[in-house]
Length: 185
Length: 185
DNA sequence: GGTGGCATGTAACCGGTTACATGATTAT
DNA sequence: ATAATCATGTAACCGGTTACATGCCACC
Image (cartoon, rainbow over all chains, first blue to last red; front, side, top):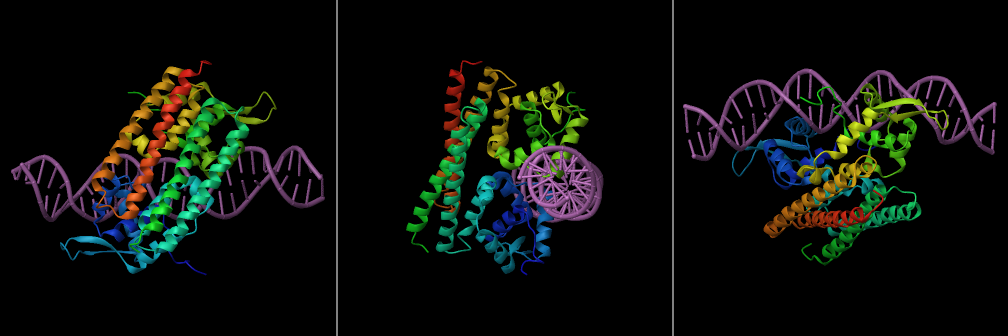
């Protein structure tokens, strides 16, 4: 009974929302951000950004108004927008996220610190860690069982996946430690 | 002056083409493949697969005809299809591929062994390795220069990227060794 | 003989791509 | 002055998503 009139947003919408939450910016600024930095590999084309901003505006998640600093028009994240963002970063992780949407997970993590507490962050990370480990185990078993029947390149590509998930698992463990020790919150 | 009447295909088209090149299969079989294996995270929905097969058929890259083995209708890769596939896997790598299209690169590598020789494969891999290293260096420098100004989560997410590209670089080096030593070609 | 998997499609919808278009401001 | 960058849009096109629809065949 919840969320029925709420935005069905793409991750692009949330990426934008997260950006303007950190710092209000113009649509042009957002485009530059996507174009020049490595952020999740979202499109920087005006045909993607401006319609997205319009969508977000329609649901009152962002608002284009003069900035207090320099008086220039900038898109701001509203309190409704902040709430939507908080919901998004807090969504429980699923197996398929880890298998298919790493970029989005990392983006959620990036935006998380301004939105939720340490506890919630650690929940996210342990979930991330466990799901990565589970997926890793799965493909390792596949690798082991199919070793002889796999074509050479197929096997090597699979091994790339295995190494990648090992790295992810390690990053999770390390990051959990960092966040746990961090006393600023 | 080349390629003007040729397909503008999505990577989904090539993923399908690569699959039916390895083994002729039904559209349903392709769907199962995408659904059950980790292959590049392509859609397995009929609304994606069948239109794609129609596209490929229009350009005579695939053909749906009875299989010699069991008489069932299956999509086969034509010689034209094989040529298109060879071109695709042989495309020179660009910086943006490494930054944004890893999955596609791995898929190209997977299909490569049935299409090009060892030399071409090593060209691909050394290019992959060098571009990964260059990109790694870039984000490492960014990490170093911005260390103090980055928000904690932003920094940690960036470190995930760094570890990932280190892994990629290592995989390339190792795989180059494996392919070089491989005498079967 | 009916449930479930095989097999192929279509239609509405929506979002991203590409390309075009415009005007304001800043810099040289 | 005029080029470059800031800033915001629109329109045609296309491909993927979701959901619906159909018919066959095999298995128990």
